[in-house]
Image: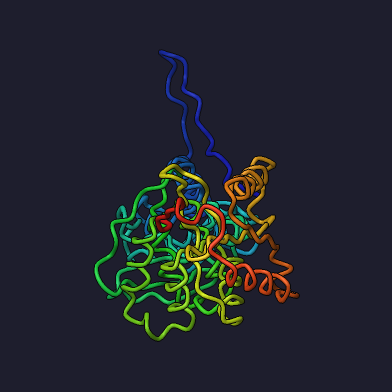
Length: 364
């Protein structure tokens, strides 16, 4: 990684000494000295912006076009990242530099930098920063999604994917690193056209609600506000699952299996109360029969405490007299027959246990 060399700082003569004769540099020497004369302001600018600048910013600082071209030569100290976007160092860009470069590229041409909130990070970059497991690590993103006003003309380029707002731009917010971003709900809505038919999109939406990165109503509003919502494959399914209370892909697959077997539709993630006091939140619950379904998914047990809470929840249900059918995602995918048969038997034999003492309310 190479940074521009600092300029030579002249040493002042002692007080009272006659000024030294300074030879006038030739035109070629002046041209060679020109790049050094702008290093200090560039270094200040680069430090604030992680060394990612626009050509317009360089020109505003008085850097000649020839100097820019010279420093962008194949063996030069700068590199062109995207059209109009330059990194004042060589080597691979960091994850933050890629995000900053994407916003700089999507900004209005000719202006040194976009105004606050004028262009926004969206899509996978926002979801990865929020820590959604299915979004992956921010450093592993192959593409960066950016939301711009609908009237602007900017095309996808390199690792940048452009999304256009169909109406007014959302307000957005400034992140801790100084970059501007949409909300998680809006990021999911912008991602829908390219992801809604895939399993990962179901997982992302479920994780966002499950982990409280957005409210269910906010996410549904954003998804359904898309002009093409009815035409997007899989989006109606995601909306239906979220509305039903499904909060993970595994629960969505369990719902598909229950429906395919012709079993009644359960409540998904309801809050159960025993004699008016909190009892548990099972994955699925059939209120007519007082039967619960628990899916032991290690994907949600990232810490020992998570697994202990899952066991405690199942034990509380059993101790209260509710029949609990337990399964795993692998069982549901490979051989759901035994689990579905056990559910069918219990449902037909119900109601069980403290049926009259159990009340419920829907998942948030």
